[in-house]
Image 1: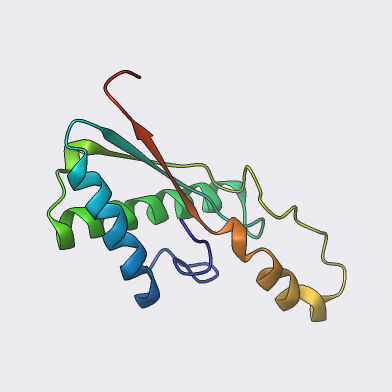
Image 2: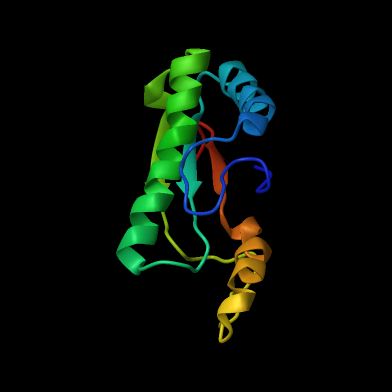
Length: 123
C-alpha cells in the first residue's frame, strides 16, 4: 500500500488519508471471500530491534482492525505479522549530525509501511 498515507514516524495510528486506500483493499477482500490475506508491517531503522518489531506488528494490526471493524471483513481471512526494521525500501544512512536526524526520518518514510499478500485457494 502507498507508504506516504498510512503511518507517521513512530506511530501505528492510521492517518485519515489512509481511509480511501483501505476501503479499496476492503473491497478487494470482499470480492475474494475464499482468499486469505497476510498483512505485513515494517518500520524505519530508528529504534531498537524489539521496539520496531512491536511497532510493525501494531501497524499490521491497525490495518486489520480497520478492515474488520469499519468494513465488516471476516477476521479469519486476515493474518498479521510484524517484521520490524527489515526489507528496507530506502536503505538507512548513519546519522552523525543530530541536525540531520529529521531529514533522515523523512527520507525513510517509505520504510514505514504495510505489505498485503493475497493467498488464493491454490497456494
